[in-house]
Image 1 (tube, helix red, strand yellow):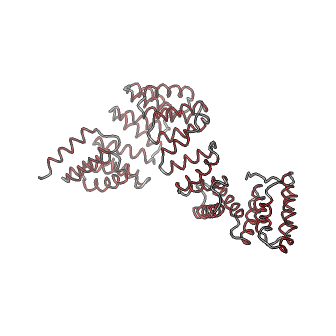
Image 2 (tube, rainbow, N blue to C red):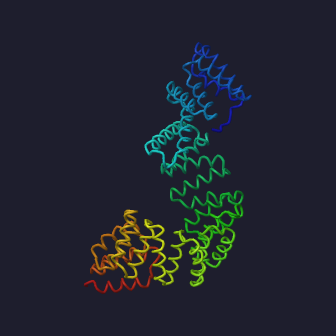
Image 3 (cartoon, rainbow, N blue to C red):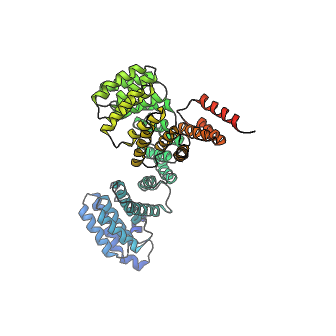
Length: 474
């Protein structure tokens, strides 16, 4: 644990406060004069690099004034600076037993528990994680109580990280805001503040926090690009990814994200060119031929896209992502037989893949073929991933295509509730209601489809709504 060692000439008032000479009478002051001397000696020895001597002096100070919480808190801090965590925790607890308001003791325990939280992972028992987080936050908040905002940036930073772990984004914004207000050029401080803003759903401030320093610190461009992409500012995101690549020119991840953003932004020609370059530079990375094929397909070269990806798929028959990408191209090109064949081949490699099971089931249902098998396939997908709204949609659609409207409604309704902005699911539910003669419900679902995102033709939905309105009795 890095920490600045106080210089020997530290404020006399601070030194006296540690050993308790500011709050006691003359007799008590005389009693603690030895503690005062030993404390000063410890400061001097630590400054000279004599750690053993400094600790010995601190222990003599504690022995000379056994009621001083300040000395024990300093011992705790001394151990924490040397990553002697057990000794630091014990000394801090002793300090709090003498004075429950000891700021330094709370600081030591808070930072100590924060380090423990930072080292935890998915295998850590939840009860242990929750207890350690609560203890860390409680001690650090006590350490900052009544203090000048921003007086201890290490504590503020630790609090911010802890608040992010507990989902308290607004508190994290406040903590990291104090860090940045005291050190506006701190890269780590601004990255953390931007993360907190993003967690709070405030993408505008997440972006502006990093925009201020990105020209001088292009290391933040990658994070900035991701926030811009989340905010739908794809042109800005592409520019930021390009800047980030000037710092890390061989980063595959940055190349992948820039190409994907270009495709989403409609600049498919540039995306195809960059994907081809990346494929040459990183021939073992199958993401780039997949992206290249998708960009070529989007540019109108459907046959070329399929022909480009087929050799990669043949050379990598066990790569599920590549096989699915090829199935996507076949399906989008109307080559359903090849799409089905590819998906069945993938199932021999990954028979328990919920994604593949659902994909093949939906493909069969949407084409009106093998509907009983389609139902079974999607049911198997839901056994792997229960409640997945996309899979519920597939199962509901398969039942609809079989003419089982009650079962179709049973699965499509929760799917539509979970994904209210998914235009395809809302359209499917509208079709079910229309087949049932529930025209008002159908119109409501189709209207949500028009307001939703992706996958439907607006004119077709509008025609359905118009026809439905003509069937409602006046």
